[in-house]
Length: 186
Image 1: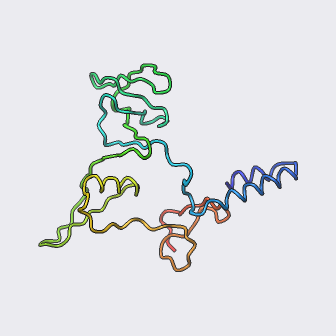
Image 2: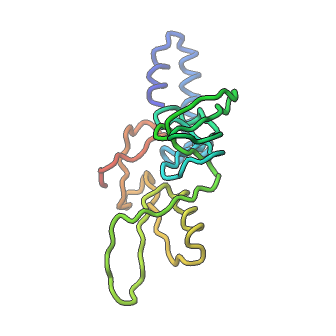
Image 3: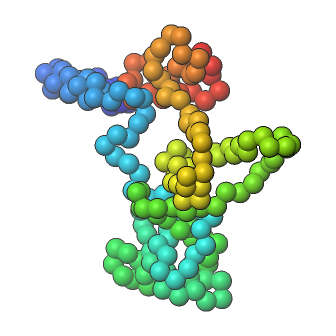
């Protein structure tokens, strides 16, 4: 938004500039929670741990995730795919592809153990999952339905609260679409 405001300031037509700045100001008021996509969720999420199989929806790892393909066959380490947009056929090595899921579709990844802490005895078992909250909750629901007693989820940043012990530092204090600066502490 700050970039747009800078460009608007360069307009020679003062009346047009004032109208556009007023509209940008109104838009910024509608976003309350920092850099949050309330009205626009990601269309596709790459699932790097998912195996590529016939009928999988895939994209190029180094390409635009919105350019998707449907796997028809797998042969000799390559996937024969149809491009979703026009049905054209292409062949890609499997290592260049990643399975993609549309937002809201169930994703069932596996937990990959990174380290353990031995408590001994009958003490509770704890698991730390580093993931997007939505996907981590999907995973828990799928793998551990009715087995989880308590979940701690990262707190809401950028509340502006003075007594909040988490990060309230912003990239640009004049930009209401701001977000936390990693590593900064209040």
